[in-house]
Image (cartoon, rainbow, N blue to C red; front, side, top):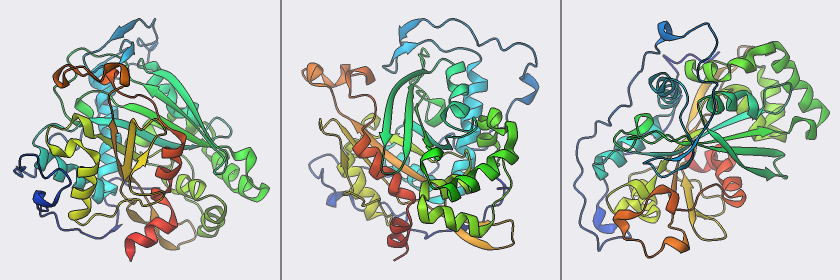
Length: 379
């Protein structure tokens, strides 16, 4: 299984010298002063195990509609907020330990912008078979007041996804990262019954070993462990030939696939995703070029981009050690909806902006972990 403490990473180390902002697309904006490179609460968080009750879970209670200060209209938060945020922090810590690009980008953006980083969404991948699909990870978020929203289908990739909006928490705008506004949640699953019998057999072999491991998906994500045995390299390769998504999930399990910076919540010229993308590339990071660097929804209101995934050294059960794709970081700019276009900028809240996700955008973002993109990154 993966160990959180000492992953061996294979990655380039781009220069973190803040590239000249004079060359940015938003050159008319005031120049940015790069501040401290120490990114706020991106630190190891000890989970409060002693606070966990073995009795009936108190957070299973009725949900009321409300509007939070972070702009979402939805359910109220259920349960203990500090515990829930500690779980998110554990997931984030595993993610940052394994993905140096994500950590470096977060530090770079926060240093240049000088304001807290807000997450747009967290994303997870799952196997849609024997209870190990979307529901296995969604249960945690539903229990704490998240609301299931739209469904997305990706027929060519044989994937299905659901996204969940966060509950309202008063005064949640002051923190950064997992201590700021709660992120949306995007969970996808491989439709295992639609792939070849041979690939199905491989996946079922491991999830059967996992048994009831799916009931502890959030715990596995927080601790950074698989709920099944480490796979054979030959079976990983076989899956990768048919579904790179399946191969990724086999070796990464319930680990965070990516976190997303909410660019429009930034204060500097980097709030424009075009400027942010140029800034990221100028500092030596590779962006996912599938379908173009910038992915735009048909209505033109949801703009997304992402880095190419890092690779991590993984030792398979047969003793083979190989580099496998890990995770990446995404950027999302949600523009103001037409009916609110005349609002003064200082009055615009999250619920005034385009919500949800777009199949066309997400389909290309999935490619951030593809062999083609990783090969391009290494070139």
